[in-house]
Image (tube, rainbow, N blue to C red):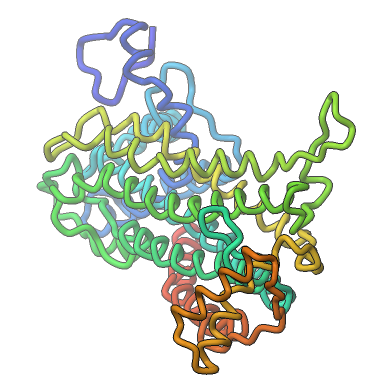
Length: 446
């Protein structure tokens, strides 16, 4: 039979019902363990200021919570069989060690605002890692864009050879895509970095809670002010964060597709690192781009995450419902998947080799046709006449390309604007105030 729950009165549920209702919560709550402890440390610090704990009780509780935090941070925290969730486990550990004083930490809060807080603290840390990895990948792409800015390659529309492009443009395009993705991450960060603690079950508390104090102790920018809205944030926060992750994942998936295609023998534009490819069990010549193929699949899966979350919380009215528990199973592990993909792409981009002699193959000659049309137009021939003449020359096999091209406008082959793209990224990164959070959490842990 399971241990008593925090909410148990006289009725015990069967093992089958407990298994169904708890689901994977114990497993998912391990992601949240150290954040639950941090939230409790801030909460009881506030409780002492409003007279619900003595200074001695606060000191005793904080000392034990710091020990639990150390265990959780080291990955040694576990939720015992029969214990419902991380909140119950922490309170159980305190009560075993300290007796009745351990039962006082829940005053003025609900598991509803506890899990909201835990999720926000977890998301903050995870978003920070995603932001830093995204910035690292951006740096690698800009570096490659500059390194290969003078190496031409075909540009495509409809997968048909279209116009001259360059590796400077190709790498730089994905860098600027990440600069836009960072705007999504910043929006997700700002929505996340608001404190729901004190909303309790969604309707506040008769205790005179000091919500500004816990907001400051945990380094939040502000609180979620309206207690009902704080609870409405459950699911909404995860969905909005998932959209930001999906934006990054979309950039990675497209880059992975390009790289797989350009690495194939039919293109031969790039060479991926050998340690990121695999062989065939029957064809000795094969070097399959498995890492990028898996990256593409994982990132396409991540792009479905916002819809998964939406479908779980879409038709729920305000207030808490157990449906929201299921979001954890899809959402919490997704950060590790995205971070793993970012790390793989950073490594591959840093090691990728570019074919600098693509245009020696005459099949790419027609991509210079627009250059010839423009040249004739500059010399006075009407554009539509120039277009027709060059088209007929190509069909007759009379077209000879001039491969010395000169594009000068902003964002073109000869003017990549990488400095401006980098400035755009830098201006966004400066709006993440990581130091404020670091200082708050370090102070709380002391």
